[in-house]
Length: 396
Image (cartoon, rainbow, N blue to C red; front, side, top):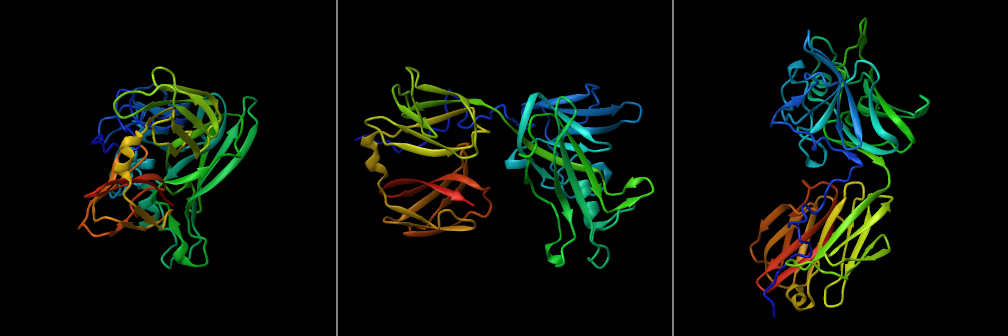
């Protein structure tokens, strides 16, 4: 019997990361920045490109003034005022990333694509400068809601798509702050990343972004004209490569299925699915005689390569500890029940990172808070004196 407690996923190796970003997404993490810094166009280049998207920038070297788009990894989300114009109120990028884009919208500023693109969506949030200005008011801008909280204020992002003939393809509006509710408890200033559905925008050569507000004066909008964007995602055909191994060596002849389409790994344990139309929840299965069958879900927009480790049958009995997770899917907390005393519970995200590592008091039940997790699919490893159990868990 092998003394092998291998996970069902092999998260590292020469193949690289488990979940490699496909070139359908502008993440800004492919742009180089020192910690707590930003790029605002002072090099005079006039734009920057991340993934399939090019962001326009204008910079005036005489007055050290910029507009359009910049990118940043500044985490300060407490300092008020213009001096903190390069930070997101979330204090980070979307999906726990570091870099993100900042729009300072003087006119209808643009992003362009290397070829006409149908949109999928993007994450947005407020800049710290705008969010704290709306929350508290300042010398130039009002406090949203007014002194009573009853003023029906709002701050809105408008995204428009345009084709190569400069014709409008569609419009999407999203409120970064909204105080129009009859119940003031529902009023909000967006303080975390939120997904904006851009699927109405099709066959776009460029997108324009506009900001508007109820707080206006003689010189235009008083609310600071900033917002933050990340993970801008386009729809396109892509390719996804899978590599199958047993934790130590590659496996040729393994059957890999992607949304029901079967292909077999080559002598290097690899197989590539070409011309894939991605979705956010694509079912991946892998199997071969003598190994435990494998199944998971991937986000096709975010994945260009994916590593799978199959568990040999003679190792499988090491993982036959009976563990249950309830509820599953869950939002805030799960109860883990086991037939043996639980020593440790580990939750692993689909990038192979341990996001929760909990040492237990060796009881047969353990409550685990998952409030801090992002929505998505995770693996839960339950370790006991008698072995380990690995199960899929979904956070809603």
